[in-house]
Length: 371
Image (cartoon, rainbow, N blue to C red; front, side, top):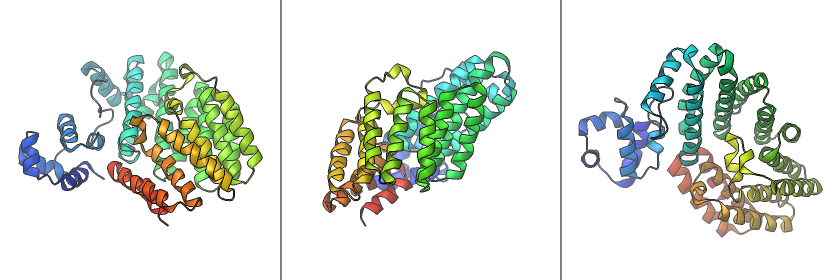
């Protein structure tokens, strides 16, 4: 959905006319009309003001047509930083360590934005940014090459996740292949392990449980700290799909034990949400929900774990697209327990969230809970 389409939808939902909205901005109604129909590109200031007036929580800013590295959030870069990035994008050989630091700042902002608006709106800006980063990697040498490979691998990994999230596995695997290449050159075994883990995630969604388990085990061998804990829970899901309750118990117990020693200081940039209170409780709950298809006792435990994890999740994360996936899992557990009223209630909440962040995936999950 384009910026103009989203703007028109929000105006219709809130019953606000174009002329009234223009007065509130304030701006020329003719200019706003051209913006709403895609004939003019909104400024960053106008996009942010429209977000504020329409209560869009950053969704319009995220859809603003932009050149590579134009910020969707204020305050992260100085004008000098932005100019340095612009020059590096135009002439990749200009990239230096300051540019690398600025790239890391923008990537962190994109991750925070995804928590608010979902994966879909970030596909195009991240694609454009990654293309510019790839050009810089081609030209990089000396002391800047290693740090640039590091941030580039993180960017392509993020692009892989975004495509996996919206159901484009082939594109996701392509980006993860770039991540693997850059991480291997860098000698970053933890990132190589993360690629194995994400490939396991994609295999799971394709119904390829053997590769899912094997890739999750590969991730465990290559990663430590919180990434390894996640891979233990991911393998537990795979073993649950294979019906091996004993292995599920062994893996979840090991994951819980290792999680006790985790420290946020050991976290890699892309792993921040693993430290969210309740996250691993929900992961445990998903494994039990799968076992609960044939085991009512496990299903009851899944409901308890998923509800507890969602209650513990920080309020700012409860409205994220990935949190919606856990709501869906809880709804499935209620369905398995024949508690249809609770499943319907959760489906309604998922529908609302899907509309707010324009998530087709959550919309499909809400519909599935009603069958």
